[in-house]
Image 1 (cartoon, rainbow, N blue to C red):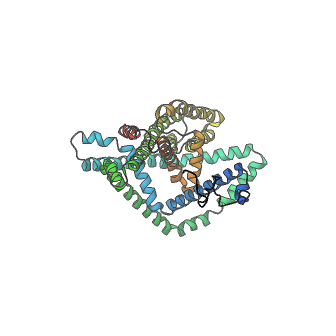
Image 2: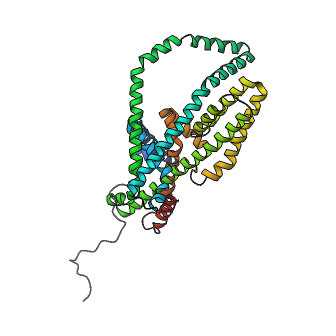
Length: 389
């Protein structure tokens, strides 16, 4: 008989799953906040952590500037000179000999440029200083009472020359220490340039020997993109500086502005600090022309400077640097000001190439597919093509 015996227990009716917590238990206080507030709090914590980590990294780089500055300068020099290596190797030279020859040419070129610039500035500095003083007096006279106050303040500061001389005498020892640091840093940077040029092609092997394949591809692509950005900045800026200095010096010679060679040297050096360097060097040229030839010559000089700067901004920059340094002008200005505030002139010089390299790394990381995505070879191939170019 198929009936169930009265001794067997009746199976329990299926019901809702057992809950370990009551349904009406209050949620934690954090979950009572609106979703927008929780999202804002999470982003605030992330931003604070990012700024803290970034500040610590910058502090470490500045504290170790005796090593980090030569390293960055060596990277910029290597980025500028690396295309010479394949040309020399194809002509039968070993990589060590090619790197040594390139470094020798670099030393000769640097000393030659410094000698020309120093000679121009030394011979032109008295004329430029005298003209700037005359221009300051003329501007002060036109400002009325405010100009009198400015002249009085300048005379008071000039009276403290003896204290300035004594302060400089007291700082001779520190000056010698600074000179020692500069020489040591230059030797270290030159040695790093040699090793980067000789062994730079082994970077892929080094990364792959340390990291897994997937991570190694990403690191290599980021390195190639950052290196291409720095190389584009150095080559483009050097070419633009030569063009600006040539045309502005020619214009100053035609206008018979005193110290034209020294002013051209200032323009060349200022071109490596975007916007600010060009503005300062152009202002000095206009003030010198104002003191020597009056308002008309100053206006002609201003026209020459503005014309060259317009050609640079509208023609040279898009043609030369737009393909490698993809930074908005506002970003460049902020980077230069921030870099000068952190590390002075060197910070202003290094700010733009480092920012361009950082942006290139971010673009590579954003374009890399996640796990299970399409092939990773395209990114590495693109980076390699950029480096070869």
